[in-house]
Length: 263
Length: 150
Image 1 (cartoon, rainbow over the protein chains, first blue to last red):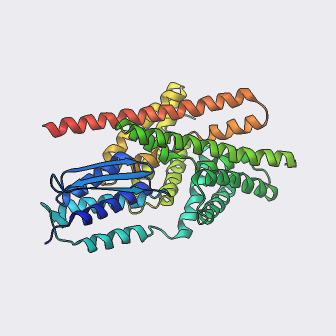
Image 2: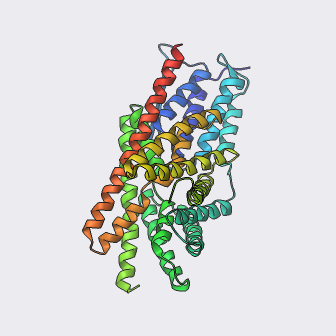
Image 3: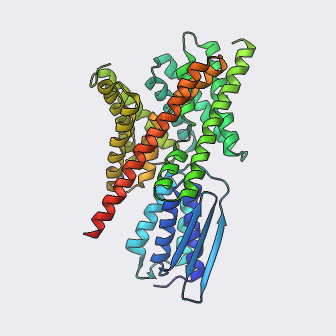
């Protein structure tokens, strides 16, 4: 039965905004969520401004006491599970933990819960890697592959997911990661082609490329632009365009190299 | 391929399976991922059915994305997951990754006609998907606003 102070409110809502934005939520939704959290904690006078690379949050307690905080967001990834969990947490806050600015949880419990969400893994690593294989194999069948090609595409998908996971540890930027990913798809497909007879490589490579397409940036760009958030709409759109160029460039370079080598 | 025959059914299954794999890859969990997989399958099935009746690529992309976005707006609200998460996973089968690859391949082979054909397709298909998502999300926000007034 306590009321959170201004600095604790800013800290917790910043943390919520950071997790949402880093894992690929739309800017409009992050703004709404942060304002909602501050309102739940009893500070209805809140302004939030979110771009894909930073968060600005101003919370006012009274006319004189206004605090602004800025957070820079650097590495971004795609983890829709965390977005869902944060949304559930905010909904639970609204319904159970806090009523009319009075919280049944103190700030430490919220910090603990957020840390738990940040750390928790939905699936073990080996399982997500196998599912990457399932995705690329099924796309290969969808675009008209045979069962043998499905097996090869499955192997390619597993190998590419594994190497993307390992490359992720090097903290490369997204653009380079997509170039390398698309290049590796072509390399694995061409190398497996040496041992497996009677397969067409087109569907296998397309199956691998579908693992990398920037669907999230694309959807976020449209939804942001539609909700009037022009800054993040254009930024996300340009990101999607660059990633598509990166995929085309990566696969193109490798196709040309293999052609020069005579395969 | 006629609509509603076993080939469409199999394509539906493969599309649903690939979206199931995709949603596990982006760390979603629980029974909701089967709803997302169903949505992914429906996207491709609607696309094939519309393509059979209209024989127009962009028409079928537009209407399949439109229908599936309506499905995801409803189901995402019922199953309490954010709508953008749902839509992101569901439209993946229609994203023109194959045309991007064919464009690159034709460019390397020196065939500029096929390259530009495929590049046009990439741009037009992504624009059409964008338009369909935009229509559904704006109409939904209007409906929600009108609903909150009464």
